[in-house]
Length: 277
Image (tube, rainbow, N blue to C red; front, side, top):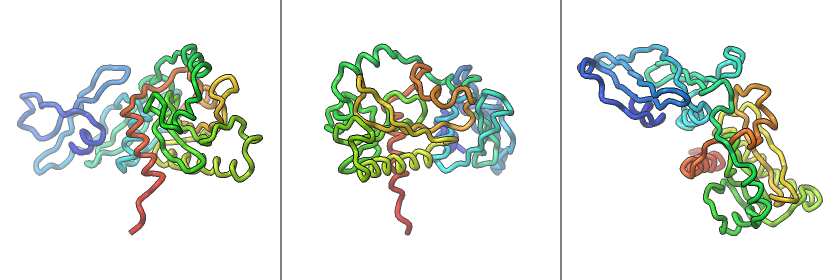
């Protein structure tokens, strides 16, 4: 049980209250999201027969928690969005058979996002050298764009300001600016072949209801040709899907270098699964 709650979910174990110290079981602190921190008691009896029961819903960032559970080999069951309109949740079972419910922090799929300074971002992309060329050359000023895949022609890396967990970019290494007129058919097919390969890896790692793939950019900023791969998680209300889900004006996911390194490692492993024995 400790391996699941502490090892997989990362919940700190607590010292049990004195009145319960003689009883079996473990206590864990469940970090609150949009609410107070909760405490979870997993009860067992000698000789460690688990108490199979349903616990109250835990308020978490559901996409991150679901991805963590899936990566550890656990089954995640998403609830029908119509049951609680606008609120996303899923269920899983711990190793003892306890049924757990995880609930998004707010009635909006964007509740876990933080504000993004669009004005500052626009200024930087319009005034700075090409960031894709810098990543290819190894001179970029950030490690957030962790490289996922590359070959002689193309490169795939994580987005620095994700609006959806798993947002990845794929670009040619040479500075090209036009998706069709600067690529012949074989070059285009090799580039989109990497898009397909990486998108399949993203779907293998993260819960995905629909995969968004698009080639955006501007001649006035971010002109280097690139494709966006953005997995829409299950349960997002219709009004918050499509362009709404992709727009940084609606906020970005809180994201650290540690998050990027962890996700990049899982995506690389999904791209290169171990050979069958």
